[in-house]
Image 1 (cartoon, rainbow, N blue to C red):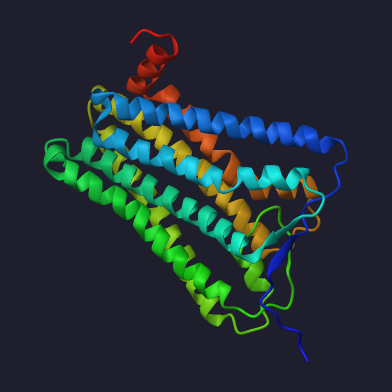
Image 2 (image 1 turned 90 degrees about the vertical axis):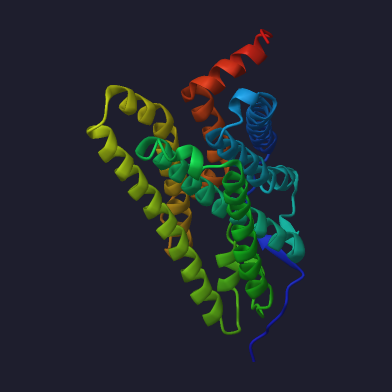
Length: 307
């Protein structure tokens, strides 16, 4: 007879004994987290406090930076605690909470980048209609949808996983992952798998729609004026770089979940599984802070006290 259970806790098996090096890893992760929080908070404050930045593009960027704080806070405090701990277990309720945080973070990231691509498409390809289409009410609605849809879709995903009967409680990761829990199930997971495929396909469609939007922008730029090309390059390049970076990180994670990666060195597997959650929250504020002129100048004024 199969021993089924609704486990009260999960064991994270990807952690290994690092001896005295755990304090070095702790300091590295802590420093990264402090940098992420500082960089994103600075840009959020800059956008909120300066009326010249109260434009749709910067509002969407502000939403993006808030999401970076949200996603990193769902991972880093947990990692820091686990690094110093000798027993790498986590309660089931907290595990599902972490899954909810990191999965909604990913969905919001893609949704936000999609909204930003739509904003750039209107600004570059339909400049005369931009102000009538991208009103303040439209901006609020788009940001609300960017957050509400992921929260609802991931809530359903977690509800399906939480109801499963499990045959074990070991997750081969350094953080909680939904697919790892589904693989532990003894009960039928057809609904979970179908919903997971639909959810993944939806994200793929969003990514393809973003690339299609930028292809349309590129087409306009090729036949447009020099000023149009400069505007497109200055505002669209960071968006594309952010999308490619995050998509690659998510691809690494999907590959790890679906295929046997035992031949890959353990430390590399950990790095690849954490890439999309650790690099993107720092990559975005640095990328946008350096490339978008208005933000860069305002940040310099704040840092050097010229305001």
